[in-house]
Image (cartoon, rainbow, N blue to C red):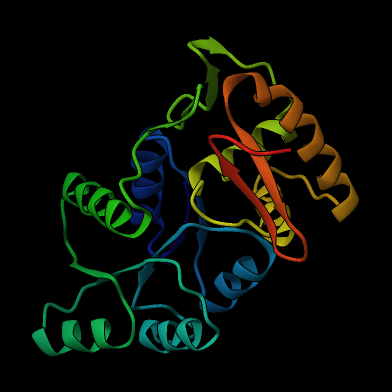
Length: 224
């Protein structure tokens, strides 16, 4: 689960990054709205934590921009303003949850878990599909209880397919997911890795269906 943290308070950002990383999330930070938009175009994220007090643009303005650009991923707002009108405005502009500063990190983490479950259909640190099991905390994929040996790129591709196994994942989204790990692949390279992964997971009752022009879908069984 990849989180974009948009927060210009260095101390708070470090605390959030440490806490969420220890819980198995991959956290990327941005201190300005402009850099956050750059990251969103270049990389793939599953959730945004957005501070409203950014130095270059109001957080609500950024929220409106993201929703107008069809970014549908869940967004949690952080703000120092504990005002009901601010909360109503944030939710009306497209936020999925809202927390006021100061807050307990444990509460934020619990609220994030609830938001993720609501938006991703019961996401947890263990995701099982057929004979495969993804442990997002330890960054491992097990096949019938045994560690599945994969290259870093193969793991990254299979990881995003397992995390969103009920959705068709485009090549572009796979490429952006890989960019979080310092990798970038052309379309034909992604096809090669999909082919390799298919062969590795077929004995465990899991397949990858290709939807031409759209992307790939992980499912328990596939008619080849």
